[in-house]
Length: 420
Image (cartoon, rainbow, N blue to C red; front, top):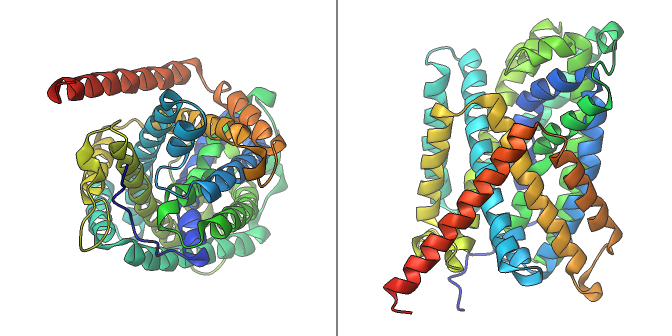
């Protein structure tokens, strides 16, 4: 099968920036509040568990991407190393999860930006951001990379200021009781916070556009996850110490609420700006990642072939980008925030379960890290997935079933159309 290929334009710094831009956003600025609600201050333990499992998954994904550097990530690995059905399931789960996440991020962006400039309503800011980032994605991957680096730098500096400036305002009593909901709460918070680390998958999904992918991708994934874990732990300790878990759980903007109580000069404005750029960066990368997955699935006839169209001038999958943005807009307008967070988490955990299974099946000569790492990632994903509420699990499998049925109908109708 001859592929209409994308252009390799991203180096190590671009790949790391894409990963950090995808990770540092909804997770630290929004989802920490949801996790605090199910676990109390012990969500920090859940954060470390999620980060550890994300590291295992990241190493599995990077060794796969190094050997199979094409758009699609686990979708491609599932097809090549497992079965077409599991490959499709991975692709479908990725699309559903990231579309949901795109809606979450857009909602968070509108909420934070409204606090920075309260001229328009939060939803109007969300819509404007989706439209602007759609045009940025249509502009070309190199331009997206440059914009993303600038966004990530602003976000990182704002969070570092939050940690350093917030330490004097930490109240130790806000950590008591530390684990009011026991290990069950910690396990559920780990599953929810895993959502906060999943941006590193964007690096593997963009493998077809990365220079020297065998060396660049593993390095980029490790750097991205290490930086994210250190930053997340610092920010979570300060936010909990300043605000307390109940207050964090009561808002969609927990870091903003914490910043309002910190005495450091300009802290509230800095965090609002950092949150806005973080959400902007994540939303930018969501559109990039989903559109490349749609491209890969269109190539294999799992989705309509028009998704594999690549613009001759900008070398981007323009139809897939426009479709992605339209669906994110609808989720932003009509999605239910807490339920969408949990459903997105469950679907992405299934995605990484398949990624780890594919890494286990890799020939030994291709494995960079051996088989222990993907086994640990696989077990961790399964445990976290089934720690989520039953209704979320049922909904997740229901969405997977819808995808399987839709794929069968589409492929069957294609065969009839072609006279097969």
